[in-house]
Amino acid sequence: MEFRLFENVQFIYELVLAQHELSALGVDFEVGGDLRTFECKTTSDSAALKKRLAYFDKVDGETTDYASIVKHNRTRSPNQYLTHWIYPYKGKYHPQMIRALLNVIGAEKCDVILDPFIGSGTTSLECQLLGIDSMGIDVSQVCVLISKVKSESIEVIPQIEKVKKSLCEDYPETTLFTFDSPKTQKKEGLSQAINNIENEKVRNFYKVAELIAHSDRSRRRKKDFYQSFKNNVEKMLQSTKDFKNAVEELSLPLGNVKIDLGDARDLKLKSEHVDGIITSPPYSIALDYVKNDAHALEALGYDLKKVREDFIGVRGTGAKKVKVYNEDMRKCYDEMYRVLKTGKHCVIVIGNATLQGQELKTVDKTVEYCEKIGFKLKKNMDKIIFGLYNVMQKENILIFEK
Image (cartoon, rainbow, N blue to C red; front, side, top):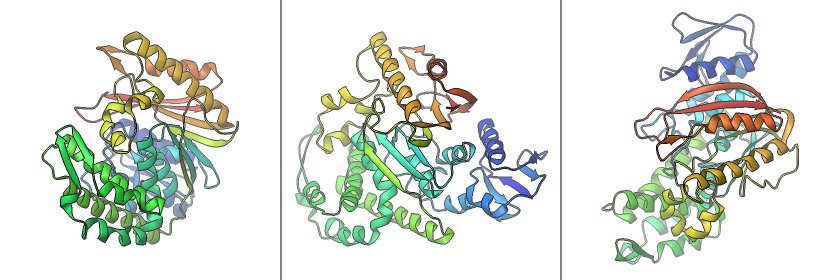
């Protein structure tokens, strides 16, 4: 049996993860001389492997489920297929990596995977595609909203289409918005119409389309708001239909997704409750998430000063900011250890943040504290972050066992 890597697999960490996921799925293999093909040395269930694998597009010449799924992509980025692209969220990790990590930690369909920093919902969406139940928690109202839309809109496509005509075709554009100044925007009509939608999942869908339009306008001042909103609705709807088509084509039994507003420092879960954790803590020292999503938070009606008090890593300045961040993260790791079942795995994707030109040893401190509270470090993989303008150029994938 032969396994072939995707052509766009180019980094060492991807090759390492590909080998780890094969091993975790019980495959005894040899790497070919071209480093792109793997030969199975024993008999394996090719049908099951086709369903699970992340970094391989072919198993014995047959297309994997993942290779079929990623074809449903309306963006130019290979990692923004289906609904993953929705909302321009900074700091998101690649869904292909998450799918592989779910294989590496041995996540099964009967398991529940937790992401206490759900961000843009990548972990939950990949769990959903593999038929694994998941729980996502975030202190950001924006993150909770967009994560729900990515995973729940597939359930209400007819209802979304029913509302679309009144909001995108019959609605009088001239009544939508008035502007007192470039920085002051009074919402009239559209927001109220969206808020009046009874079905929460449909309402959330249109609210996110509105938030993306706010983001578009904040980054490109001359972009027409209402045209952006209509374009977002259309593209989001088509991507949601792609999601549904992929599910039907591949007969995917979707996992249950539960996403809630919450605080990773105080998880409202019983001890020994979840079967795995995959997450990436906030890089708040390097990236101000409140400032980054200010337009969206304000559009949702939230007070930025109050929101800032709830976020990790954005309070204080200089050394005090670092101290508060480290204290908050220790509370998060305590909670993650408490809610994880014994013998199960916790994956933390994290890099060294930089403050005022000085690199902070975030990775070392994370390993040190997690081992102190009882975690055992099983793997520590370097991960290159491709892109000139990223906040950091390298992360580490830390896999702990409780």
